Image 1: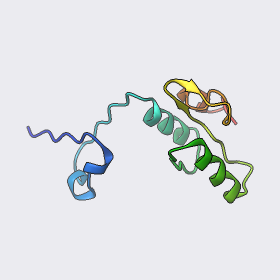
Image 2: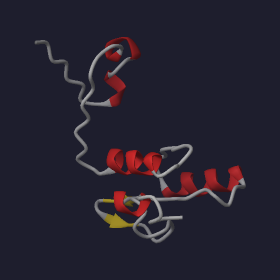
Image 3: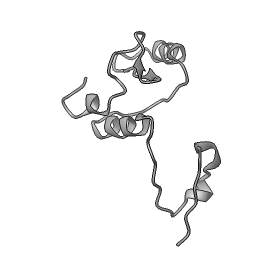
Image 4: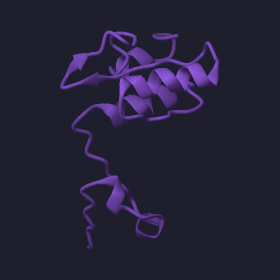
Length: 96
């Protein structure tokens, strides 16, 4: 059995992942939240680094269906909707 470990997405390549089973260890809840949002019908996820970047992106998209979510260090950011990084908020019928 051969196991490859990638400590960040930057070290993982399409060639390195092609045809392999991938396991993601989600220590920050982001991956779980993304999977829950997609399962609940979300059409696209656009990760950004800062709340300011997220707000600018929402304004550029001019779409009232855009949801912002995030937290830093486990604390919610008042500039985005509270609780939006919790996977449960995206359960079918549980969110917007």
